[in-house]
Image (cartoon, rainbow, N blue to C red):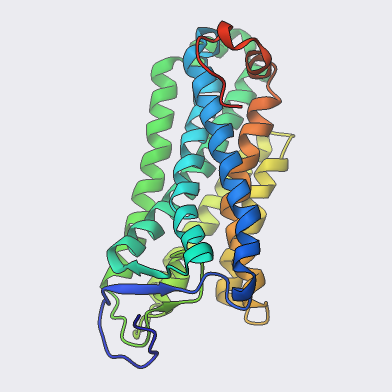
Length: 295
């Protein structure tokens, strides 16, 4: 395994993920809560998707957005969890350069998409409360589809420069990433070139997306617990990578993982189980839904 910090290469064929530096001896124990979170994420979000798909009464904008959120959570969690668990369980630290860039793109792209879905859900709640008689005429299926496409396109397009910039930098110092997944700044920090473009663009996107989305959400939401669980650890992770030299590395990596793994586990509980219609369907006899319940 090419662990040398002095090897001379450009765009290496593989990177080495360390997992959680400083807590290597506890990787097996750490895998228990992370694996549990992943299982709950899978079961919770798949259950939401099955219930909404099978029940015509739930074919409404609110539940369409909830399904978008469930799909986003499944993709975002699956983009990092299997590899992370393979590091914890089998010490499988290698990841191909192209796979690392793909993982980096998926993680950040779907984080932005999830933020956009929160805004869409907030807008749906705002219309339902402030103009309930026109809710069905304002948020028609074509409008919901357009909102969904806009959210996906925003995340996809804004993160493409990250991918191309990370791809073009020469990596001639080391291929060791002190992280459990290919986080953008953790990767580009390994470049043996001046990378202010990546730094400035990353900061601009983060503050633009977070600031704009939180502003719109704050206008229409009052229940912000899961939203805060998504944004606060994310901002902490983003800023400490750049300015938090005094923060212990293992604590930073743990927060970065919690930022990506906790909301996908909480979303189906907060937005799904606490929703009366979905809770009623979930607790109804299995035969009434015509499919075996996942939970």
